[in-house]
Amino acid sequence: MRLLIIEDEHFAAKRLRSLLSEALPESTIVGEIDSVEDAVQWLSSHIEPHLIFMDIQLADGLSFQIFEQVKVSCPVIFTTAYDEYALNAFKVNSIDYLLKPIEIAAFKQAIEKYKSHYAPNSQRQPDWSAIAKDMMTPRDPYKKRFLIRSGQAFGYLPVDDIRYFYSDDGLSFAVNHNNKKAIIDKSLDSIIDSLDPTLFYKISRKHIVALSSIHKIHPHLNNRLKIELDLPSEEEFIVSRDKVKEFKNWLDS
Image (cartoon, rainbow, N blue to C red; front, side):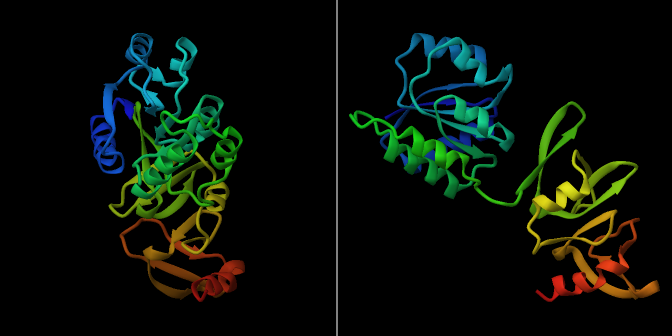
C-alpha cells in the first residue's frame, strides 16, 4: 500500500509515521510534503498513492486548494486542529478527518473505514453514501478543545485543562490550571451549551466553573453561595440566588 503524507508540522508528521508503522506495517510512505505548491507538483508527476493523509492548514494555504489544481482520485484522510472544516472535507474525496492531537482510537477507526470501503486492488467501489453518513454524524456532543489565538498564531486549549470561564467587557476568557487566560470568541451561553453539563456549570451571568476546580463552597449574603477554586484568582465566584438549588442538585448528581 502506497501512502502520501501532506503535513507541514514536523512532530505531527512524525506522529503519523509512528501510527502508520503500527497500523499498516506493510505500507510504504512514498512522500512527505509540507505545502500546497509541492503537493500539486508531486501529484502531477507521480503515480497516485492508495491513500493520502492531508493536513488542512499548510504553510502556504489550505489543502483544499490542491483539489482545485490537480485531480485527486484516491481517498483522503484529513488531519486538522479545527473541526469546522469537516463539511469542506466531505466536498472532496475524503473518507474521514482526524482532530489534532490525533488520538489512537480515532486513527484506528479511520484506517478500518479505509480498509472496509476502499482497499487497494479491490474491484469493490467505495460506498460514498455510507462514508458521507458517517462523516456527518457528530463524533462527540461536547467540545474537547477551543481555538485560541496568540498574536498572529493560532493554537488550541484542551477543555480538560480549563478551570473556569469568565466574561469581561463583552469578551469571554478561559483560564487554565496555570492561571493563564485566553480569549474565546464565543459568548458564555454558547460556551456552556458546548460543554459536558456534568463537568461544567454556569453559576452566574459572568462565570462558568469546572467541577474539578471547586475547592470549597461557603454560604454567602442573600442566600447565595461563594465558591473557592483550587487556584488563586482575582475573580469572585458567587452562585446566583436563583441558581443555588440547581447548583446543589448538580453537585449531588
